[in-house]
Image (tube, rainbow, N blue to C red; front, side, top):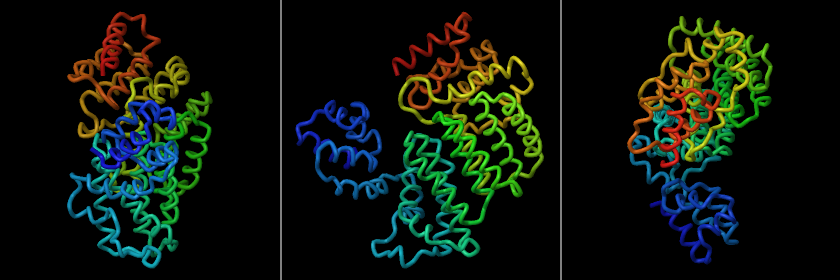
Length: 414
């Protein structure tokens, strides 16, 4: 059990407030607060602040314990990286903004380790990366000479980008946006327009997924402008697709189709280019995976992604089926099973078939996800609910009726 969560429960009960009463005072749900207090969900600073406000008392002593507690729970973090999470007690940040070669090498290891684990169910990678950023962002923000400190700034930018993606994945929207801004600023300070633009693709998707397509389009176009002379084929693909998605949501059909054609051309170039292993491409790959998987929502119901492009892709299928396949299927490389479980792969493939107007194939491909025992939870349950929402227009087809009933039963019981 989380010690901070337990302390919150003690403070609440000492004040004579029930869990339902605290829910009313904090605008968090009763089950959510119960998970915080029992340790089923990680306690963050905003949770402590909410309790303090509701109880009309200071809980700063609990805030101070959050980082220390998080570090203690990183059981699967490699030993050689644990020393990165917090600076020594005697460390004077303002006096020593620069990083040693050993610190930078270890930070690069942390980024690689976290990238490989950011889509799992564990919280250790997020806690590790955010703890490192909490200790070292003030140092990074003092490094303004990009020629001399470019490596440190790029590493910090990648770690902030990872933190943003993982925060968005658990629906910590405020933290995700904050880390996205930090990441873009650090990459820009390093004089790396490709990395800056790659990071902005994550920010663009966040805006699209939260129902702000006009702002998302502006960010995507800013990224295109920043990287106009140096963009890699993979970056051009990502930015063209995002521009298309934003225009599609806004109902700008002509712009949507133009951007999809550009994306298809760039994808051909990217397929011929030699594979690269750099911070920008890792960021783009992570953003693409995040777009496919969707946030790890803990509630059953339609996610925001199920609302994206609804009218636009239906019109595209009716008028230009060749472009629809390019936009939503053909040419996209498959993801590793280490990232995409068989169940999630089945759901993603089935949802794609719905997008392409192929409900019979969608029913065939979703089969592996309907035999989960125990039932679906978290991300899997949310994506099944997305399928339920997206298949409404095909609800008259007998096979779809059967699958929808099965999903509804699974999600309800989970």
